[in-house]
Amino acid sequence: MAQPAATPQQVYDAAFALLKSGQYGASREGFENFLAKFPEDTLADNAQYWIGELYSVQKQYREALAAFGQVLTRWPTSAKVPPSLLKIGYAFYELGDMASARASLTKLVNDYPDSSAVSMARQRLQDIAQKEKESGKGGGGKEAAPEAKEESSSSAPPPQPPPESPGRKRIKRLAGE
Image 1 (tube, rainbow, N blue to C red):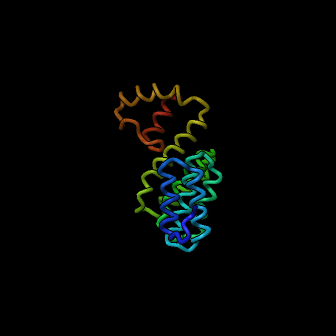
Image 2 (cartoon, helix red, strand yellow):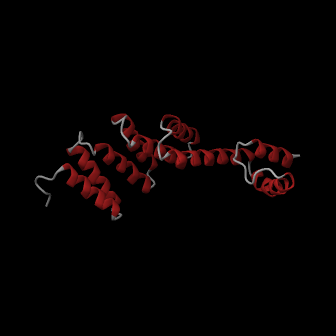
Image 3 (cartoon, rainbow, N blue to C red):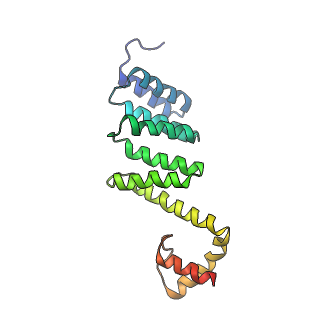
C-alpha cells in the first residue's frame, strides 16, 4: 500500500532506489509520480533530469530529448541544465543528428564553462568532428592512417594531433598526393 502522507523526499528517494536497483521503468514512473504530486518541489528538476537519464539508458533517445528539454524550459537556472545539455548532445549523437548534437554541446561549453560536464562535451565534439571527417572521406581514412604514422615519425609532429590541427591537415594533404 502507498504511504498515506509520503513526503516529497520519500517519494523521490523511492524512485531513486528503483533506479539504483536497475528497475528503470518503475523508477521512471516513480519520478513521473513525484512530478505529478510535487511539481514545485526543490527536487522537481532532479526528478525530470532522472527521467531523461532513464530514457537514455533504455536507448529511447527521442523521449530522452523531450525529458531533458523540460529541464531547460521549466528550470532554466537549475544546476541540472549543464548536464541536461550534455545529455541532449549525446542523444542527438546517438540519433545521428550531428548538427544538433554539436549545437547543444557547444552551448554547454560556451554558456557553462565552469561546469564539470564541459570536458565530456569537448570530447564528444571531437568525436563528432572525427566522425564527420571519416564520413566525408568515404573510407579513405583507413588507408591514410598508416601513411600518417609514417609521415609523423619522419617529420616529428606531435603524436596523434587533434582532428582540426594544422598537423593533421598537412598529413592528409601529403597522404593524398
